[in-house]
Image 1 (tube, rainbow, N blue to C red):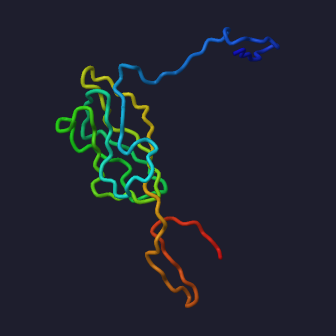
Image 2 (tube, rainbow, N blue to C red; image 1 turned 120 degrees about the vertical axis):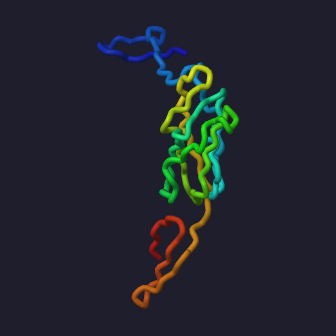
Image 3 (spheres, rainbow, N blue to C red; image 1 turned 90 degrees about the vertical axis):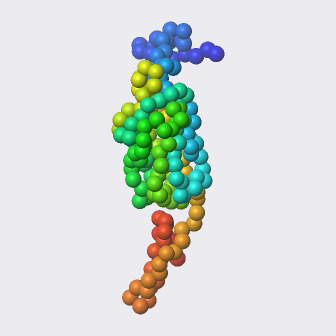
Amino acid sequence: MNWQAEKGCGRRLHAHEYHFHFLVTCSALMARVTSRWPAIDEQGVAADLEFIVLHFDRCVKATNQTVLKLSVLPRADVEDEINLPHGTSDLPKETLIFPLRGQRIGPNRQIHMSLAGEPVVSCEDEEPICNDFDSVFYTVVSDPRVVRTDLVEDRWLRSIFDLPVEDLYL
């Protein structure tokens, strides 16, 4: 492949004249998330999800100050930060389980996850984990349901739905 680029004063440079540098945020020695449940970009996750699970490639340590940050769109009545109830002493050492404790995320939601609070570290050298696991999943899609209908000014019906709906004028 004959790749070329223009650079200053009309001088043509060829690819072999460039030095490329890549920013690597995580080294191979850092513990990293190898799988998660729900999985990345998973569709149709139950609206009443009970746990979020992160599995690492090696032993990790966490505290009850380690939190999973959730960004739920459209907004739902769910805590933004889910605390880890215990350290890893009662869990498999490669797995962190964040219980949602009866909170209902709801249908038609997009959820972004990230770790915050007390850092999760590797068991061996207590180095911080690789925190580049931007993750998102989607709850089950459902149609909005009418939860209440009111008569307004004796001539209009107003319906309240359980999900956001777009205004449609008939």
